[in-house]
Amino acid sequence: MAGPLAGVKVIEMNAIGPAPFAVMLLADMGAEVIRIDRQVSGFLNGDDSVIGRGRRSLAIDPRKPGATEVLLQLIEGADVLVEGFRPGVMERLGLGPDICLARNPKLVYGRMTGWGQTGPLASSAGHDLNYLAITGALHAMGHADREPTPPLHLAGDMGGGAMFLAFGVVCALFEARKSGAGQVVDAAISDGAALLSTMYYELKQRGEWRGRGENMFDGGAPFYGCYACADGGFVSIGSIEPQFYQLLLELCGIDDPAFKAQWDRGEWPALRSKLEALFRTRSRDQWCQLLEGTDVCFAPVLDFSEAPAHPHHLARGTFMESNGVVHPAPAPHLSATPAVAGKVVRNGEHNLEILRELGLDEVAIATLRSAGAIA
Image 1 (cartoon, helix red, strand yellow):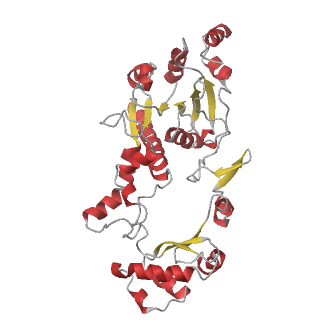
Image 2: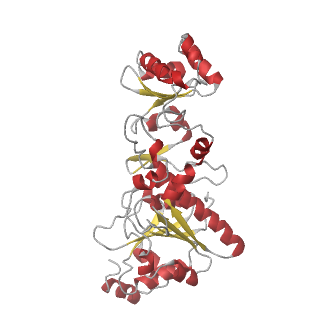
Image 3: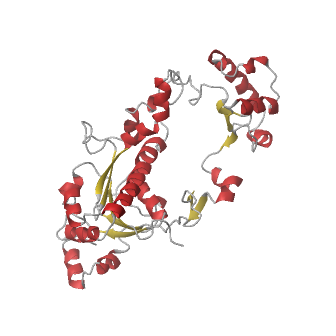
């Protein structure tokens, strides 16, 4: 069954970071993707990467004679172009938005950068941690008595970057289908990460956000956090609502009157210490037997090896295996047009197939090869 983006044609200029992940989301939902892999030594490509699934690959060096025109021909028949280079790179390749939109006025031109296409930092190098750092979000993460803790690259590259790029592309596609006019999607990781912080800015304005490690959602509250168990494993507790908190106390056999002051911030450190001692009295599995599946809001903290085998993930098909690699399956679940993970492709695997579809004959293909544009 075709996915909801079936019929949407995407040209992906292969890059690193969140752009390939955003394109993976589009491909999972049925978009037809041609990934442009440059014939340059050391250039990162999608070989054997599950993030590179669901594409066809054309390995061509846009700096070589004839290559740019081939790419423009591809772009003429596409709905979307996605690139993840620094500002100005595509323009120097002769593939900037003005040129591409002139050839294809309906084109959605998706651009993924850390700082965005404009602003004083636009041309500067950076990584996920840096983009997150200027949003205020990184400062709020971690323990109060030490430096902020990097949250992997989920909040920046993937959450603030890839997800917003994919969302922006789909929004622009919807508009192009109505008006016939394409546009540029300027997706910046710093913008997206800032927007993900909206609720915390609201709490700050209301005077309800304190220093790092002193708040409900950052580990300050004893009823919302992680605890070590007797076997070295960890569990997570999120008993925020009064009825869930009361159930936690009942199931854990806590009758200490100090725990009645759930929202007394002054008591939080002492209550956390008491819960730390309590959770160290049993193994993680023992706590699971007592609390998992109840309204306590509980879950064991699983590592990347354990998570795929959890019964809930098995029931929902949350993980899958490809070429011996276990990795997350497409999401979300659509009832009528479900997503499907395509196979992983090799750099340049579809060179001749794609060039012939464009109408290039063997002479033209040989010319590209002799110019070093294709292998």
